[in-house]
View 1 (cartoon, one colour):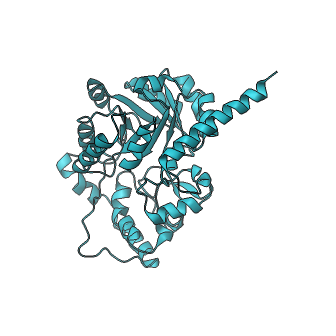
View 2 (tube, rainbow, N blue to C red):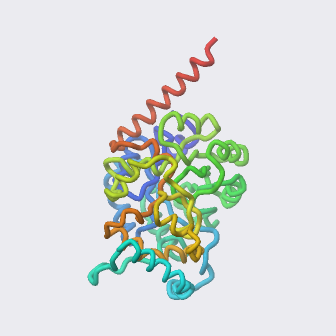
View 3 (cartoon, one colour):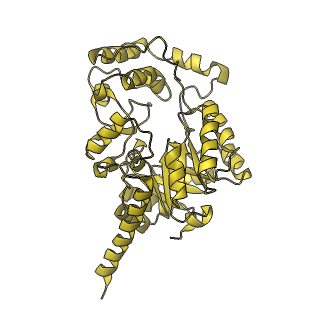
Length: 368
């Protein structure tokens, strides 16, 4: 296949795969697409380790890194050395009590005394994401992507000075235009079907609007997990696809077994857009956690990054308990088509086989 993005990155297939798992990233790139490592959960030191491993296992193929630098969040004007403390002080006691009561109702015990301290503030502030960018640009990455809004213009310029292209996710044409204004090279038009942070417009409606609004290549994202959907995205004007949830259940993924099992059993109706994870709307697997935050007893969610700071320890406690009914994680509606564990190579092969079959089917329909 040949589109502007395959030419831009020197890849064989216009398939971009977002994953927090380095093994998936390397496997997709080796298969001819482009793996993109989600940096959010890594400290700069951990990210250095992950990228060094990818460098050694990607066989010289291009790969990318995804960071989260939201355009707006609480504490944006706080000094870095006082950021965590001042943000912690902004969390109301009523919210803390609500979380504790919810955990108690489900029998979730406290963390053990020897448990690691964990991190209450991940890489979704300017202060915490910039060190990740600095680490990423020390490696031979081909793409730096921003998951929430337009990246800062100086970050775009810095990436370009290293010969690195920049992509950003957009959930409306207006957002796409803002990203082009700061110099991004690729816009990822992400429909509401997607897992994680996402808007309200469906993929089928969004892609042609974004394609018509900008002159840079557009990737179709949200609810794309097979070759027919890939063909539909390109038919709408996209020049490649951005996939995420699809890789949660591949053999190489480090998805916890409990989460993997629930994804394989879920239908497309089992997800919901919720602010209960980060404070911004994100599509998660629907469960008693998401329902509790929508109940009449809920104090309401807090703005980013306060919500995750509020619930971070709770999520760790849930993950170490048997309370699977509270275990929450990002997942898109495509999970309704994901019912078996496959290798990354097989997923890529099936995507391209189904894509070819879709084109042949259309050719038959249009034959004289």
